[in-house]
Image 1 (tube, rainbow, N blue to C red):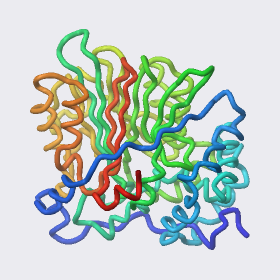
Image 2: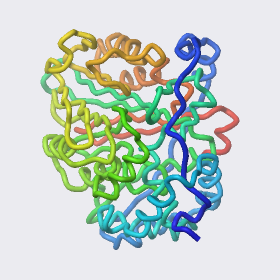
Image 3: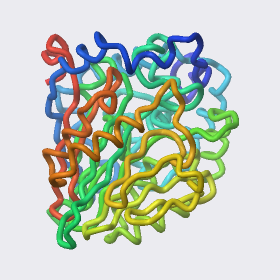
Image 4: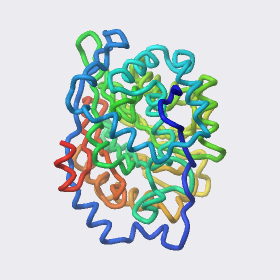
Length: 406
């Protein structure tokens, strides 16, 4: 049996949007009403003790009944996309985990495989899941019901904002649009990573991943990952970069949470470490005016747009935003958002309207839950405040699905 443990690994990167209706989902009132009817459900909270050996940190996955059907659910989710084309690369990665990933994360991944009844190759796949989200988000089946790019990964929205007073806090709102099936939503977790008995940082991720999709280090900073596509053959390039030592954005984010104590340290590392794929990092700090959108290529940051700074790249004034907030979707902020997925324009308008009387948990959540920032594909919403360490996370489900994911 191969290291993957399944006949093959994967498929295409994503179908192109076609037809005149591809941009009409935002005007679909029925779809909007269906989205508004979804319920917010708290995600599962767990603790990972970083003082334990890596092989013991995720032991609860084996004993917690929440994960009793994890193996069959995750294999069912990925199996429609398996293809023999990439299998040799996955197998090679699985056979050299400690050469490819941070050593402690590699050890964690092997332990997770044992705890969940998976192969090392399947856990490798899970830890690259966000990078190849475009293949998983199944946009080809719903390409008129929500954001779905012409190529590249699935989509997200991020907001960083503070009020005008010098003592006012920076807040961050995060939507992750993945279009998960209900069974997989049960495995979304908010993880408190502890050291010396104290929470070092909190991350949100899917069980089986060791990296974080977004998170917060109290008193320091918060960060989220948004997908970016800048051309090329993503899947082959991704696996090749992994084998050459490039770090996935999710793994790098967790490492930054573990090792950085300040916004400036986090920004520097997120701007400079080699990545497996392009990405956007949206950061908020613990002091007034500290926030930035980092637009990443594989080698380094291509742009950093801070709060209260003019954009160096947007000379044409395509995306003018007030200095006190930044709203980022999945397109370079100095380029026009595509008509098929312009969540930026209404998102900026909502931020101006809903935050004008103050920036706090309630007003940020109002922006993040307004259509189409929150849409039919939105699975997770979080609100974070680095100064206080507050992070609240919800998953969005239909009334019927809520019985499956609680």
